[in-house]
Image 1 (spheres, rainbow, N blue to C red):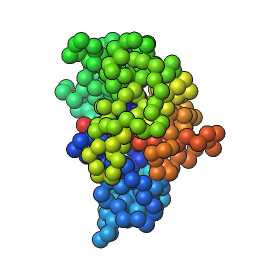
Image 2 (cartoon, one colour; image 1 turned 180 degrees about the vertical axis):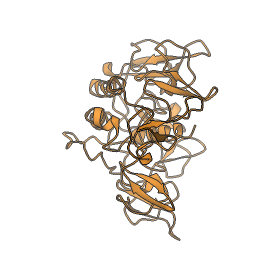
Image 3 (spheres, helix red, strand yellow; image 1 turned 90 degrees about the horizontal axis):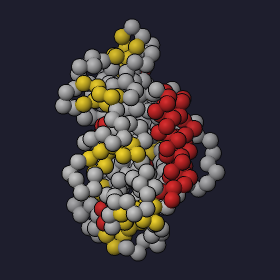
Length: 342
């Protein structure tokens, strides 16, 4: 997906993974448990930056039942819920509109459990209150059907699963375009994820071209937009610096393409709501119906050079490769976190 989209899902797991400087190179510094944090550093997987201390440090994520102040303090698959005067980590808030519920805590925060179903008035929608196959139109506050490929759009979340909202060449309009569908020589916008990575294509100088990511990090850059293709991020030379080198953070190749499209196809066919507050819960529709595809997608599409030992989903089988979650995947989670608040 796009550096700004993958940078699309998920997500959902940490409060702040990287800090982008004014020049837009990406500052990245992995620190250890117990280290001082709070200035943009990345705590290791299974930890968060506890800013309640006089000197913030990386501490272990909280298990179910422990007192919390926000979701990012809880172990992956849990959310921080408010129950009367208490706040604690719980396997809750994993259901979307129209799903069956027993307790209001089963439903995402924007929904109520009414007559055994997660519900909200459809004339006053938010991102988590639309049923599967629809998105919340922020202008009308109505849930609209996801847009088909070729339809005009403004944002990725308006397009049907497996498509993105891309700028049309030689036009100011944006339309829904199937991911990885553009062939060699076709015009593109850097970072869109429209070029066919299955054919090792990337967007270089405005066109889809055969592309070998710079694994050595030799190209100087000052922003992510100056790095070629779909697979590179501008990593600052110095933490908090203003310039950097293009470094490979995503995978280009047929395995990642297949895994990504399989995941989105599964979500589309499953009837699961796309956006819920706690999609990583083992009890969520996405986890039950598409957990295998999600694990595969995470394992095959990102490399481990720029990650901080992130925690995998508990239901994922042992990996057969050394692939791991990356900057782009965790950034993608920030996109979903953003969608939850629009």
